Length: 270
Image (tube, rainbow, N blue to C red):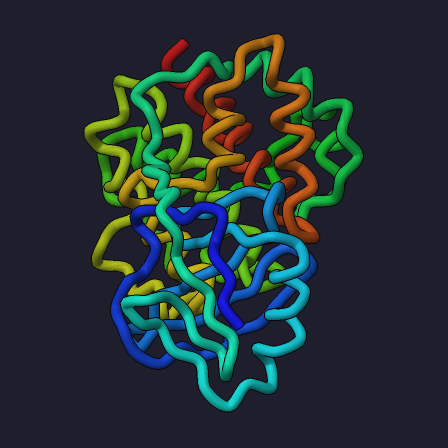
């Protein structure tokens, strides 16, 4: 049986060989390549990561049932083979690189988040945190972020990997911070230094999260997160509201990371 992806990221892993099933949720199916990179199949309409392909609902449901018990999963030139199912890559490739601009401000994001009761993985409801303005509980992630703002190397050891899920809370928050760093012109040239290459991501966090963090360190993000970064005051509520539904906590944690970045930026430089 042959199917075709509806879209794919140009930076999705492409090393040919066997794939290891790494878990599935209601919107994403994860595999690991032979060089331990994450390749994700996304349900169409629910965002496309820089490590992923987007597939239709019927194909997604079929693969969700097939992949956990498949005897053979491989990435080939012709696409992904899962036993007798063949998923062709297609021709709709997307380059999910952050642009060197954003209209997103601390004030605008705060206005949105103070209305959101969505739970973060570690820090409670977004609305409570933003309305109170008390970010002392977030000190573990603020300390290395402040080091980076001051031109020193941040130390994320023991910080990333904390929180529930395949992409732990602090990791999602760091992805949000990196998205902001790449989108504010004065920081773009040093954005990658926010996550030093010397840090062994595979040691400190899950393989899936390590893959997403590696992409974010290089300036590549999901199309839905890029939509939030590119939002105008007229479109933020729709774009951020859609992004907030990602994962159990991932959407909320990523937006929290962005808010903390912009909060510290505002206090240090404005």
